[in-house]
Image (cartoon, rainbow, N blue to C red; front, side, top):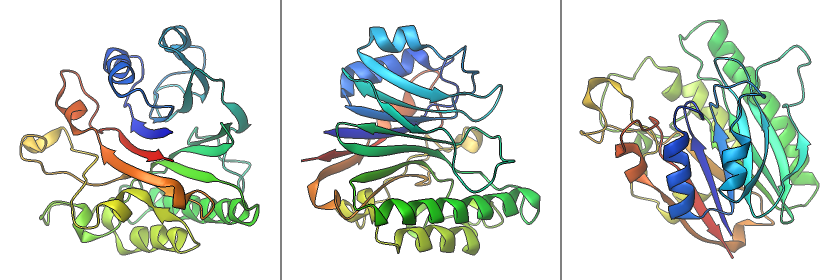
Length: 256
């Protein structure tokens, strides 16, 4: 079973890229972020034609998350992260697919920091940690997939000081990610690739893709019930080099 997470950065604009990748990579489950479309604008007909069922939560202009399943219909379990009734940003969706609970997470960026956007990021992390802890107690197979907007360690970003003030690599951001993983989750990509960069994001600015000046922001965390099934993990880097590409590349795992 192949599960992927992909910040598509506008699902309608990148639809040709997405459909080409679906045909070539044949993932069984795809967690999309940054749809940048309303619910009504989500290209469900094209996705169904490609052989995928889908659940999604859109939002005009920004955010938006979806879960696709090949030759199956995801069973929707949540369309929002619990813990704040006033939070109306479309950043979390959760569904059951073939006996596994899968999430699509689009964690807040947090810039500029310090400030209210960074506070929102850290608060969102706390809410995610609380909900993730409850999932662990249910003793079920779970994959927390998504764009976490955190490069967890210095090895998850190219050698540079240009990002030092960015929310993506702040000590508090990294500590929040570590606290989540330390609940008992397995960072799938880093587990199988302990020494490789495994970047998933290359900013459009400053020639960063040709220079391979990337960051690892997209993660798949596995619950103890499913971690032993992990066979492979990787990043489809070539997607970032396509014409009209997202600034992210799909990260994926294969489970036994």
